[in-house]
Length: 171
Image (cartoon, rainbow, N blue to C red; front, top):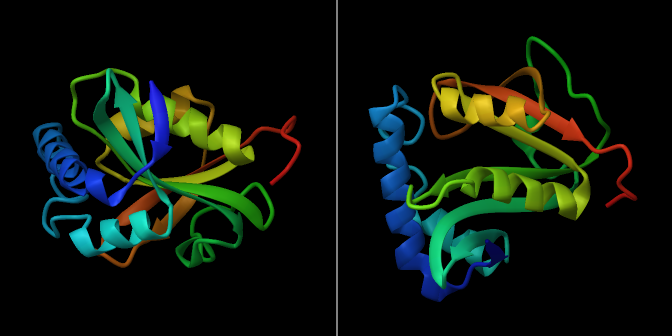
């Protein structure tokens, strides 16, 4: 699977993938993570693309997955406040958000997360409490549940996870 930075030409396909992901989540006991707010909005996805933070997974020349990735110092203000626990690492970290697949190829989530880890070696991610599929994937990939954070798009708490590859040379 190839992972590349998304372009504006990918926008229509990306929005199709997010619609498929919302339907999948609703069918698997997680209707509230993105469904009620039709998350993510196209304006946010356009901004992610313009900033070079949106990435797509390509299999056989077809975009089959999408995710947001950024890396730096204290890059996600929502992660400054964590309840019922604490982050493991320091200020420099990567975040991966809005991981989604069209469901036609297995391993999109794993490929996305492993790619992001290879970029910075220290990742934080959060997921809805009902998103058991993502929680299982994060645990399988060696992430530690660190506590609870809250997002702006709804009032549902999110489970916060972190993984640090100690042998990574740094950001």
